[in-house]
Image (tube, rainbow, N blue to C red):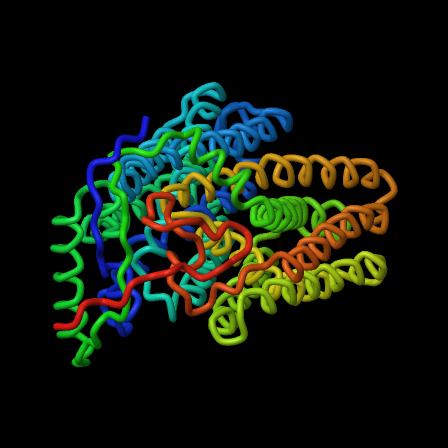
Length: 498
């Protein structure tokens, strides 16, 4: 139950948003954002290592169903972990949870590497997914609350796009690890998982220096801690940039609470922001279906229809296009605007995907990979912006849980149905080796992406350059009427002079 503990007027959000970019912000990016590299590494290694897990002598004696079940266990863990840890992130703070979830991922990955049997492997994959799912909620909320408003869009999109750095690394890593002349087959897949744990341990060391979100602290009655952290950030940024900081131009009055009830959070999302709920649902389902359907069955498509024996090189090229798209296009989400860029990337990638389906029979392995690269150059920026949207357009008290909710829904709806649908299409067409028979999957993905873009065009929120508090008022704000979906700016008081 929520209990009011006091009321304060603070200028902390304005002070954080007016900071110039400095090395300190790179600490936040590296300490928090690199988890997406881990996820990309994890997913790609698992997809590439499926055959290595099947032998009884060097693997775990798993069959194709077992491999698919392990993938489903990872997805289920990610969905449950996102919801469970997302709620805890809003309740107990960003830092406690982003340390905990990365620790869970690290331990679970080590357990995966030492799996003695399939049951152990399934359980370890579920826990690994739970850690990664919790990371999505804790990290996105923390990043957005620490990064200045002028840079928030490009940073979020680029960080989410770094998933593909891990995917490319994982693809290339599997090439020597799956070569029996280089690595013993009994150790190759175990080493791959072990390397992920080593990288995660390194990130944990860096992450210890990232502070708790001052925004979360002052709402939960810990304004002295928030003030101390912000003063330290200001001092560090001023020393690093050499710039004289301007005075903050507004304040916000908050009714502090130790905790916010889950019922209030749910009512807020459903009743106060119904259009934003529809928007996030459309964006997450579209991108989850597209990526999980196309990318995670792409190796199977290459081997079944196009005679490719070693898929690692192709997947690595595909991953590079994805990362470049998020990196190159990310500044435009702040300059051109969220609505135009998200709608444009979703619709354009959907149209290109539909065209690829029409001409699918004319591609070979190289040209299909290049076409896929072009499609996902745009789609990766749009998909990354789906996470940005969920983390911006809901109140601070609900931010982590909202990210978790839409991630879980999108993954459950698109992330499970997509691979099952594509897998069924590939199996049906494998006897005739007719790649055109899987075009239906391309068309469904194209429709969902275009639909997401259209919804963004009509319901999108112009969040570029705005403080989080002006996009969605905190539930505890001292104000005589929340803005909700009418998107009115938050009324703030001018900061006191002196």
